[in-house]
Image (cartoon, rainbow, N blue to C red; front, side):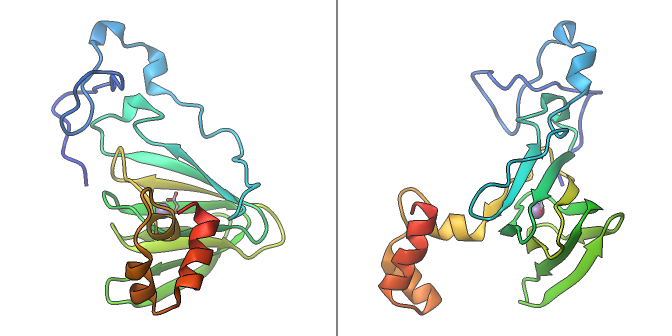
Length: 195
Ligand code: GLV
Ligand code: MN
């Protein structure tokens, strides 16, 4: 989904004082082999949290060599029962492959139709750009997925955190009306997500 590059590569200078639509390139005289390799997805993520899951991002911010190339990857670790909660990527379609475990992978269309399947190692999925989706570990073991995106910075809007954990907080009046529940319910959910 990102624009096409206009040169072989453009290793991001993440500290440059300006950014227009992406990052400026560091001078090619400073480019080394290391700029084209990234070991940040080797390590298992820490799943000791509310969702019992962890997304390790291999986007342009983590791996500046991806700058302008229109691609990136994540590593998703899920403990048994862990959930990568419903979220969308505003700037990319996602594909993924299950490396280990057994997961319910689901997506919801703009017409509110829900599609899902239980996947195991070696199976792939696709999430069209911008659609809400999740992965739930329904197996007894840890699960591991690698995902790939057609953007160097797909962005992730996590529904629960976005609405109930924003700073400043979305007014209760908006959320009670949107979800047709009492203020006490909204405040309870906000308390889980620091909103
Ligand atoms: C999984 O949905 C991911 O965004 O990596
Ligand atoms: Mn995703």
